[in-house]
Image (tube, rainbow, N blue to C red; front, side, top):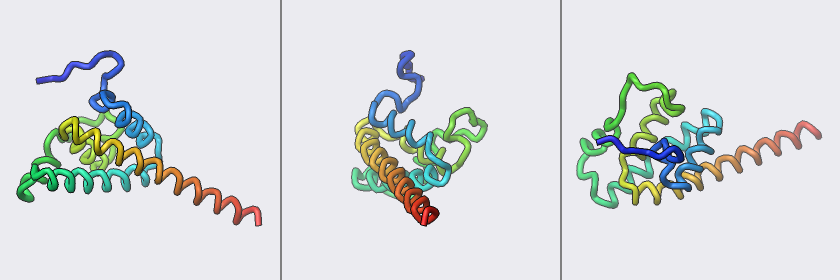
Length: 130
């Protein structure tokens, strides 16, 4: 069954404003930051699903990772990297209630990483001026 989106919500993550903004910010970050956050997302999703007892065996995790992956699909910004694509597909396959929880954690990760990058750039600028 295909989901129908309005013009405002053409992507699955646009239903939740927090998730939508976190994904938009993630899309605009550098490649290294995207990979680090994707790895953290995968970890959080797996941990959350273990806590909720949705994963009972390693096979369940593998199936969740593989669900929705289409190697021929390369049109989305996150399809360029397999780690990022895996994280986004795992997030997409989570129930909306789980997506809302993870969206807040994801937004915090993205903002924290951007702050760290800005602090590092300021430190480099100060070293250059000295």
